[in-house]
Length: 70
Image (cartoon, rainbow, N blue to C red; front, top):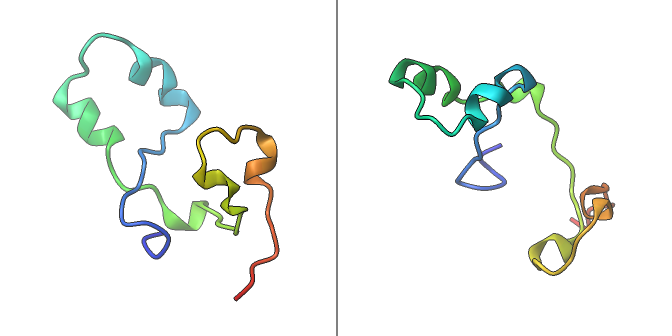
């Protein structure tokens, strides 16, 4: 995914949501386990509208695939 953006968000599997969202600090071992690169082969990328670049635009339609003009 690096060609798209130099920074990546943390991608967590659903079974980690409760622990991650707990307001108490997590032990370093847990953070190290969670904060590792996500497996690229489990991700899919597609072009979306440039409307995603404006924070006032909202809605599910922003993530719908578009035909890329390359």
